[in-house]
Image (cartoon, rainbow, N blue to C red; front, side, top):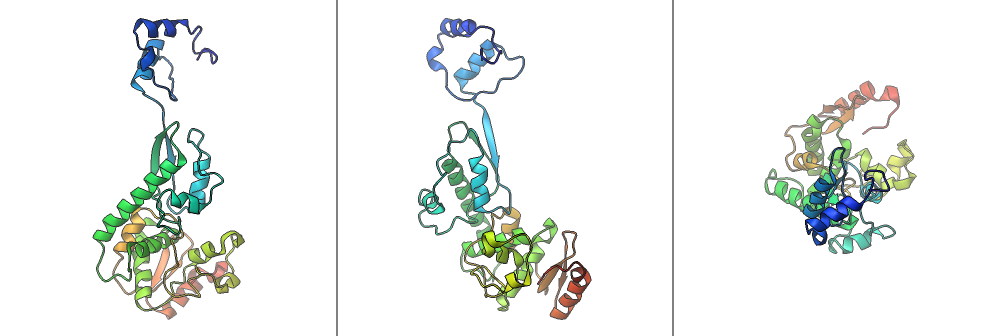
Length: 282
């Protein structure tokens, strides 16, 4: 504090701490000092342990690699997972997991200096478990999911497909009906996820035809793992999809979608909204 010019001399707080007999009660940590705070007030904060609280936010729709990058940039967070692979991280959180993707809940988490990145991940994982179990208990009957993880995979797709919040349940309804009828999901975000670093930002027809375990144009059913971190709304939509007959949807170019019942109607919508921009859609 003296080096930064906040104190002209450190003698006063030292003498004051001795006078009050609180020297042994001061708690180490990172403290935030505001204009107008007196040395006496600051000493009281040291005794109370009123340390600076930091926050970190994980955004819905991001993947685990994004999450790790966000963690690595937090200056006051103790870094323990840098240089470790995902398998090592999972072994310290839940050894039964085979993939980290989508298993952590996107939200804002608070921490103090000295907390570790692994502690944040544990809290995020447990929060996702709580949310998933809560919505699973109140899910619509007759859904094509065998386990809560199946619903989580669906929620991760909905998260990536949704441009407008009010369409989540409708998009969920399309995908659920497709699964029930044995139709391929044919959703671009899963193809992009399967391409990994090969995706250059432009999805081509050849990409849709390239078979990977995440290509829902070439394979039936759900992909093997989630493809993103879904938020509450997408999980709720996966568990309670909208009723109806829609089997297709196509982007209008403004973040919304046109929903249709038949392939003929869908092709008409594609011609109307997509062919002029030469974008590949279902």
